[in-house]
Amino acid sequence: MPDEQQPTRPHVPLPAGYRQGIITAVTVLIGFSLLFFRYWDFELPGDWTVPSIIATVLMAVSILLQFFTLWRSLQLKDDDEGEYGITLRWFLASMLTLLVSLGIAGLTMAELDKH
Image (cartoon, rainbow, N blue to C red; front, side, top):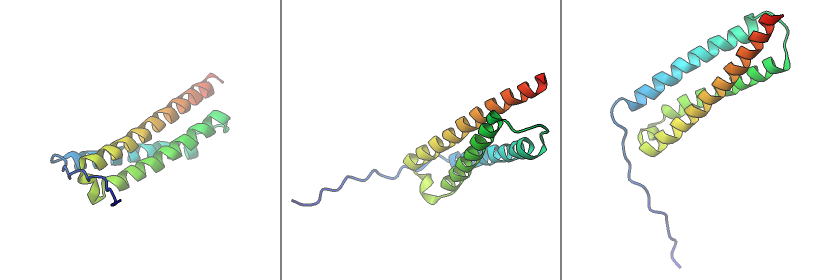
């Protein structure tokens, strides 16, 4: 029986500007995340609590996901629609992780203000 290979999908390039757009969006989010991370971890007064540690870990995970997304978006193969879609899903995962982290951080800061 001969080897049956999966048919390969033809290369479909992205429209002009799509890659530049994702690279810009990721770098802006990385900049914000790193600045907030610095403030949250090193400059905010107060004691560490379980929610603040969870927020910090989630924020660090989000930053790592953002760097991975940036790395993917700079690859030549990301000019294909299929690869670009995967990169967008990684970016979405990093944004959702960041939003959860910021929500927990905000609730933690609100609790600090009450005391």
